[in-house]
Length: 102
Image 1 (cartoon, one colour):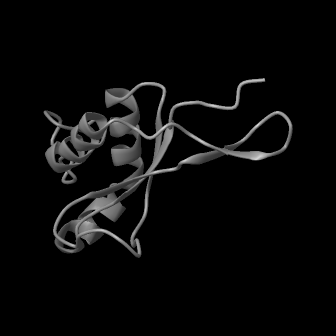
Image 2 (tube, helix red, strand yellow):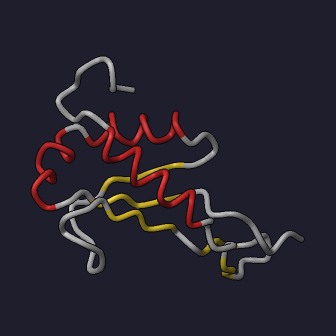
């Protein structure tokens, strides 16, 4: 039984000043990130108890339930991947211009 795997789910929290616009385009951002990072899924949240109010906060979901019903930890995601996800969030155009939209 496989008890180790890569992180494939992430929560993204927008910076405070962009929160309302990003939340309004939540589904588009989730699809945009899914297209940019195939095999991964993303959920946009309004608030996280950690992080920086001035930058996008990318939180990996680090646990999963194995076939035996026990909880296991995923392998920690690479730092460069986390940075690329945050950069893709910054590049996302929440106003809906086609050049950046998913």
